[in-house]
Amino acid sequence: MTVNYPKNWNELTGKQLLSVLKIIHQPISTEAKKLLLLKTILSVKMKSLRRMEIETVARCMYVLDPFIKGDVSLTKNLLPWLRLHLIWYQLPFKVYGPADGFKNMSFLEFVFADTYYSQQFGKKPKPDALDKMLAVLYRRKRDKDLPGSLTYKGDIRQNFNEHLISDHSKYFTNLDPVKKLAVRTWFSGCRQQLEKMYPYVFSGDNQKKAASSGWTQVLISLAGEKFGTIDQTGTENLHTVLMHMNEVIKENEELKDKYGK
Image (cartoon, rainbow, N blue to C red; front, top):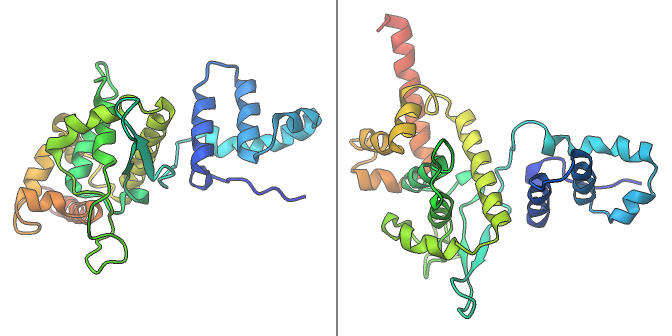
């Protein structure tokens, strides 16, 4: 009998992702977590697992390795939309997130999202940082330029507007904490992917600048002949900007190595 099951984080369903994260963060024993995770990953009922011999269950535990060992490699957005409402009697509405691997994210959107992501950690994490990060990433659907139209540019979300973050973040206050955790987990996985794709950007001086000033200095330094004004640079595709940055930094490093300057 062949059982199909997810081999990595990107092969999970959205429902499985929420279940896996909820189990991992439960205050229960490691063995209990593994059993619940096995049930979720294999999509079987608990009574079926309990009927299995201990040796058989033990042999199945290897399927958990991608989810309990190493870094979280989630880059597929398994929650492409969220349903929100501020108060119980208000009609809910949908907001939509970025594409897998940040493919349709603007550089300015990443600047703000990554800043709020960083603010969730450290000695003094900001309690509203996660909701603000969600407000940056998840936005309502635009009225025009949708899939099928000649003007569609690969993103159904309304244009990013940094001036609306604080106001929009309040809509995420009552969102299921596990869904919030899922989005943060996905963001972390995509960020790790960026670090591997653009190693020169996410190391050395640029990483220090990003950590200290939330990428603001990096954005200012990029504005100029290549992408135009600061506003124009901010609207450029994230990967386009990072690819350019990576090449420039790489060339500079090679010149330093060659000439010792």
